[in-house]
Image (cartoon, rainbow, N blue to C red; front, side, top):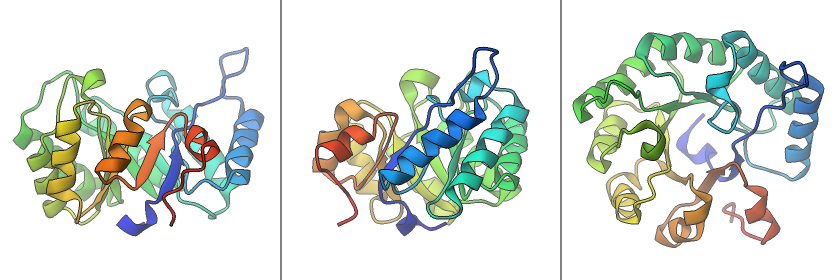
Length: 224
């Protein structure tokens, strides 16, 4: 998967759960078919909206295997890895890769309050271990960790496997600076639906959101 494969609308999928607390596989397949009928440009299971932290490692694999099988290679699958520490992230990243994911959306490590240099080393070490295209996931109001635009640039320069950054920082100045620093190197994805129009005006060309069909329903597309 390359930078140019990130385009248009990428739904951050929810994970259907049945009354027994198990992943509802038939409903998950139905949800995938709905998105495919709507002609989305890729699917993103196991983000924050996909209950990554609430699912067991086995259930995470089942979700990605199910989504991958249902899609049948027609659009890219970007699996979320929202682990707090490096070893756990690597284990889950390898599991998602083996389950058929085309790329990983990797959350910044949290709780330990890493330095900018630490964040740079974290992403480089993950890519070395897992060897898969990565979308950086920056969502400081959830993690308490903010990736500086200059750090994102250094990570992208260090690793050609970095193809994008999901930007959930609600600071528009920060978003604009990211575009200045890395807009020619990797894709900057709008990850906040409430800031979608501002992000597009500033230069984003991809949306990765839990409510993507809103944008399709108003006639917006990045594909052209």
